[in-house]
Amino acid sequence: MINRRKFIKKTAVGTGIAIPALNSTFGILSCEAEKTSLVGHGDFTYEVDKDWGVQDPSQFPVNDCHEMVLDKNQRIIMTTTHPQNNILIYDRSGKVLEAWGTEFPGAHGLTLVEEGSEEFLFITDPKTNKVCKTDLKGNILMTFTTPPEITDYKKPKEFKPTETTVAPNGDIYIADGYGKDFIIQYNAEGNYIRHFGGRGKADEQFDCAHGITFDHRNPQNPSLLITSRSANEFKYFTLEGQYLETISLPGCYICRPVIKGNLIYFAVIITNKWDTFDGMLAVLDKNNKVISLPGGSQPNYKDGVLVPPVYDQKTFLNPHDVCVDNDDNLYIPQWNSNKTYPLKLTRV
Image (tube, rainbow, N blue to C red; front, side, top):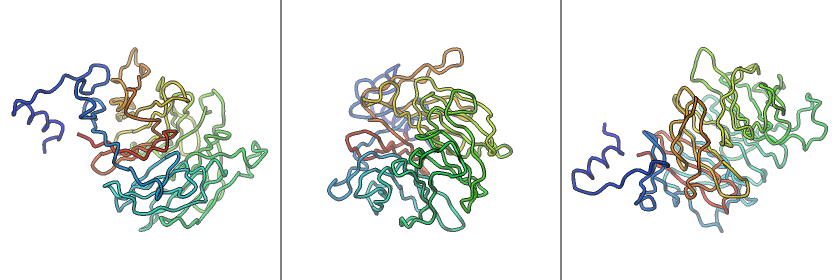
């Protein structure tokens, strides 16, 4: 099967259509960039569709859009902080199928898990200091609040969870990324097991433990992949909370890691200042090396260290997550983006 990107190039050459040269900094078409809206590098190049998720704001309003997941029916579920609806459910064409939820005014992290033939969501809300497990209709089945087992929490509002992940055995890990930076482990019934991490500069600590996921790429040694966003790095831990390794990504304030196949996808929410529009995506290979930066400059390493990337000044407005569909297209919700709806990147 011929790659669509290669097919377009081959067809253009065969018909005598001129193809502009690639911009060496950003890896996009320099003279037709606004028309083609191509971003990314190498085999991970995408066409940007900023109209994909746009809705009538009187019917489906959004504030900050934080995370998106894909269910087994190919519906795309998103958290947003608008008080009228905290969850929007899209089909792959960009049409909203359902909207629900007013209990999560700070709706942030979103994790989808399968239990038998059913699917469930874990929604984190740092504003109301809780994590809720729901069904796909929004019925709340389990709630986690400030853990009494951890004496570091002097007040309930110090618990500000940002993300969850669920291991194959059902254990639930909550990242308190806007609170104390602990990773808190529970069993499937919601019983406390342990906690680790905490805020600090040591290897086993975090500076904004914003995202967490279960990394299954090495079946013999599964691990937890956890972001330390303000430190521009992510860290590997065992499932029991033992520190393993740090991967540095200078200049990248990275949100949660998303794993598909052997690749890791990140939203880089900013590279410089929090009060400006900024950000890009990052695609990492199986060796955790950045191979594409859609919305940013060409990935470049010097002496084995990533050179801080540069925002392209147009593609994203503080992207917060990456949702990857079965065709390797990407769906991107955006934080602090003037109530912008999610956009789609079609792989070419």
